[in-house]
Length: 93
Image 1: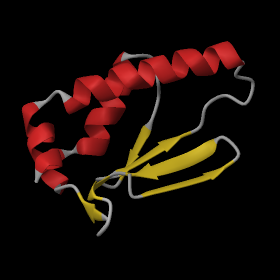
Image 2 (image 1 turned 135 degrees about the vertical axis):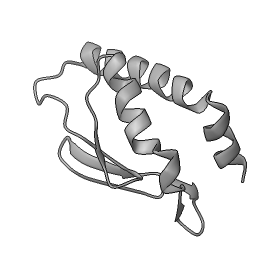
Image 3 (image 1 turned 60 degrees about the vertical axis):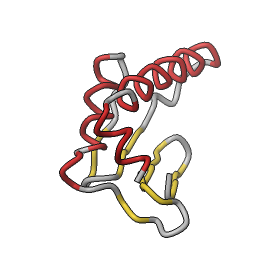
Image 4 (image 1 turned 30 degrees about the horizontal axis):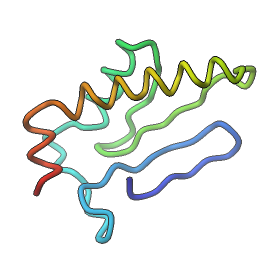
């Protein structure tokens, strides 16, 4: 992650391949879109902005249990996306 910005629960994450230089992933990888699609399959809605930015806005009424479920689903989402060979190769370079 290169940057994270938020106001309350509204936020965005910048995905980068190199944290030091903040170099983004190749646009052809479609990482933000892939994460958003996988998240949707797991019951989470993210919005992919540009090639490497994810936006999110969970309900303001979330309970602690609902946040725990959200993070479980997010973990499954990232596990799915990071298991793809092309994503793993992009992370290694």
